[in-house]
Every structure is written in structure tokens, then in C-alpha cells.
Length: 298
Image 1 (tube, rainbow, N blue to C red):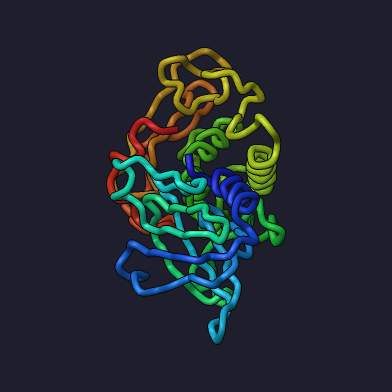
Image 2 (spheres, rainbow, N blue to C red):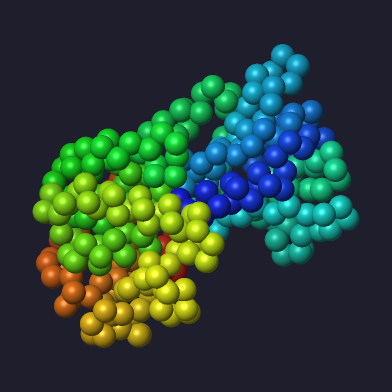
């Protein structure tokens, strides 16, 4: 699923595939960028901040270096095709960007969201609201702790999903961190050791992103059905105690209250009745199009 580690790994893959190539043709299929042209620019590389991807292009002529911001949400993807290859016909209507490269390969941005093209020296316009990211060189753990503790009454899962406090954690990591902390997902954030929570979150996210075979494995075992403690385990039960895993449905349109898994035995504390009120922009992320896109996901 597209969480901070997913996007970081995507950026590294795109760097291996296309960094250093020159764009010879560009086609934006979104109204706000339909007239923009990246032809003649070299792809400098990719960076990430939380779940946001930044594709950087060189300056050309009188135009300064530029950065394309994109967000995958639940269904976005990037595809690089060899010369002569085409995307399946059913995917074509969902293409939002096509880049033809100087080696005859083609890059497609599929179902991309929040596409914005800005001068590279103004990237803060699109990601400046985000909190510290453990996968970035400028990671500031103390600042993440400070931001998470701003309102100690906020439920733990809501606080961790707020990208303005700590960028990169998605629903999987939030559910698993609540379990490993040994508290209900709706325990007030001020009742836990926030510094320890941040340290654990950063370690897990980095491990998932950088260690071969560890991608989104939270238990240490990558065996299918054994890789998570509670997330997605409503049929198998809690991996620690074997008891039932409860699941609370997401609140449609409210990214602060996503689908939540927890073990009532291993995670004592308040239940979903302690959820915060509806706050459509509470996590610093754009509103998702519908609740259907995340139903049944981890």
C-alpha cells in the first residue's frame, strides 16, 4: 500500500530507471497542467516527503529547474515501458502523464493525484506543511515528538495519521504501532511514551524501506499471513495471544478515522467510541475520493 516506505522505494526505482534521461515529449492529461511542456529537460532525480513524490527536472532556456509533485493515494502508480511497448487498453483512460525519453522508452503516470508543477526552489509550497519524515536526511525526531504532543487528548491513531506531525505513516503502520505499544488505538497520545513511539516508528519505517525482504513486515516473519500482528487478521486472530482481532470500519471522508484493527486483550483502553469528530483535512492529506478505495486493504 502507498505509505511513506512505498513511495520512498518507488523513488529509488524511478531513479534507477530514468534519472539522467532527457524528456523529448511530454503530455499532461490533467486540466491544470495540460499546456505545460517538459520537453528538453533532464530528469535530475526523485525525492520524497512522507507519501508525496517529487520528480525534479533540470532548467531549460530561461525556465528554472522544476519539480513535479504527485500523490499516489490508494491507486496511483508509475510505469516505465521499453520502446514499442504499450499499456493495456483498460489502463489508458487513467493515464495522467506521459513522458517520452531520449532512449525511446516511455514513462506513464497512472491515476496520479494532486499533480502540481513548481519551481524546484519552491517545493515547500507543496510539502512545507508536512512534519518530519524518518526517511529524509533532515529527519528531526525531537520535532516529531513535539508536534505529536501538541494535543495530548488526541487518540493515538489519529495523531499518528496526521502527516503534519510525522510524515510517512499510513494505516498499516499506525495499527501495528498501537499494538506494539500495548494500548488501544484510541488511547490519548499523551498517555504513552511519545519519544519511544517516534523512535519505534522511525526504525520500522526505515527497516521496511531499506532492508531486502522486510517491506511492510512488522513481526519479523515475511510468511504470508504471519507478517502483521493485528492488521488484516480479523479471521486469523491476534498473532501474540491468539484471541480475536476486532476491526472498526473507517469513517467515510475522514482520513483521521481509518479502518482500524486491534486486539482487546493485548491492547486495553478505550474503544472506537472515543474517535475524534469528523475532520476531513485532519491528516494534512488531500481528501480521498470515497471510502470504497480502502475497504479491505491493510
